[in-house]
Image (cartoon, rainbow, N blue to C red; front, side, top):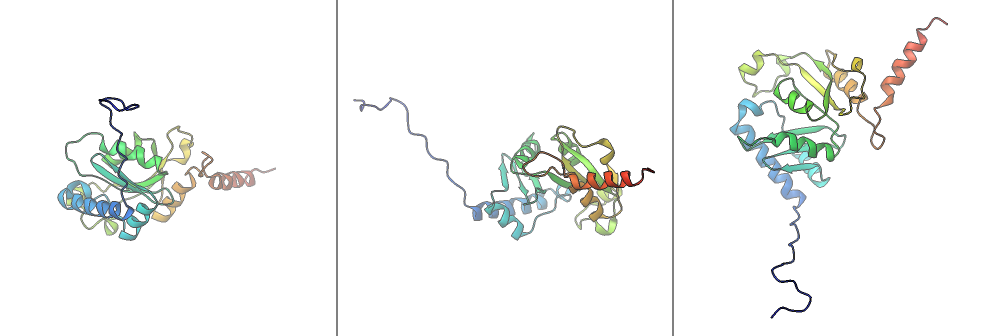
Length: 212
C-alpha cells in the first residue's frame, strides 16, 4: 500500500556531494601534471600554476572542473592552467573558458597559435604582444614550436567589442609593458567599464598637444 502523501515511483533527489577544496586542488595538480607528461606536444604552452596558487584558487572557488579538463582563475581575473585530458573530445576548451569567465576571468596570455583562436571565439581580443624570445621559452617547448617563433599575446575579455581598435594588438618589447597595457583595458569589477586610467592619460596628453 502507498503511504499517504508519497508519490509512487518518485524518490527524493540526492544532494550533490560537495568537493573539499583540498581534494579539488589535489585533483587539479595531478591531472595537469599528467596531461603535460602525456601530451607534451600540446601542453608545453600551458604553464602549471604553483601549488600555493592552486590551493588558493581551490579555497576561493576559482578552479573549474569541466567535462574533460580543468582551468584556474587567479584573484585578479587572470585565466591560467587550462588543460584538456580527454583526447578526441570536442568543445572542452570552449566550455572551460565560458565557466572561467563566469568565475571572474577577464584576461590571459599565451603563445600565439591555436589557443589564440579558441580564446577569440570566446570573446577575448589581443590587446598587446611581444616578440618570441628563445631565452624565455619554456624548457619543454619542442623544436618545432620554437621554429615558428610565436609571439606572446596578451588578451582581454571584450565580447561586445567595446575596446577601440587602435588600442588593440599593440606591439611591445617588454613583457611587463605589454601586460600593463592589457591590464589597462580590463573592465573594472562591478562596472562593466574598461579601466579609464589608460584612456584618461592618453586624453590628457592629447589635450596638452593642442596649441591653444
